[in-house]
Image 1 (spheres, rainbow, N blue to C red):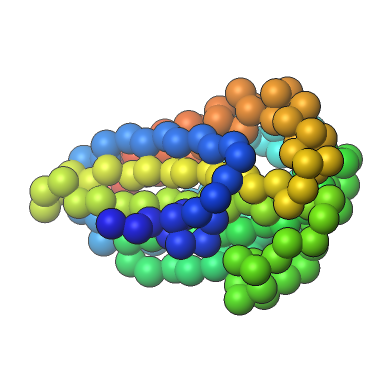
Image 2: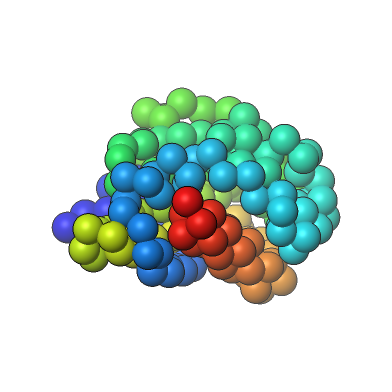
Length: 174
């Protein structure tokens, strides 16, 4: 089965995968993925602040307004795309449409995809997975991003783990 990550970014240089099992039906989790305010996590607040991301981006919907673009959303999957020079302080984030993401190949940039996938284990149990993939359009961007990734990868993973923890906690409370 092809995932949205496989469809939008089948070739990539870097990746990160995290998952958790949530004791809740997938149809109750899906709205949480998009709407959940993860500003309750001091870790996420601190890491977003270090990157200069404003407080309104503390939901996936908020990220969509800060140059992350929703590529596809259905009841079991969500894919967000981002194009930029992530090693720069501003990220030099590009504006693009979902249709323009896959063919984008301009030198000196990276494309990133961040997906959430809900897989029903049984009627009341769901696996929630998040995958991040990064593709560098040329050798120079690969070199620059490699150094950047070495520094931020642990923190990037921590954000995803915290988001999954928040989704699990909120879903199992309701």
